[in-house]
Length: 170
Image (cartoon, rainbow, N blue to C red; front, side, top):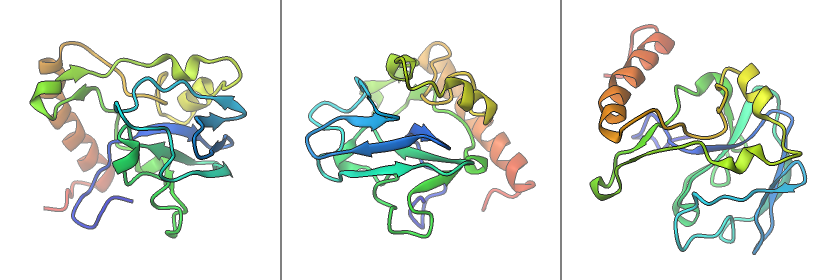
């Protein structure tokens, strides 16, 4: 799904295999019939006014992702006409974002939002079973931003090498 000159995307997992996701113009994102409260959406953006969709059922082994900058994000909505239909295979997930590193003025950790703790969504257990972690549906904060930033690059590189058998595209 990334553009030809990029290898990785940093997006939020909104729905996983078996979930139904939709968003109508002017409305919130809805997963399994429950409206999501998404406080992390970039100020001034709306959940999906520029690209309404659904309802869509996410196939098993896939995820549906959306960016925080909804009006400027090449996320699952942008790729609905591609061969992937906007879905990302779980085995292509290389990790979770733990910090905001750019721009420097916004350095921060990424805490787990309460979005997916809402009753009725119930996909935390499924996310764990898929290997996305106990909080696999959202980025996780693991400590001070500097520590996270210093640890993020080696972990991503190690995981990419492990998944690609030692090649990183260099």
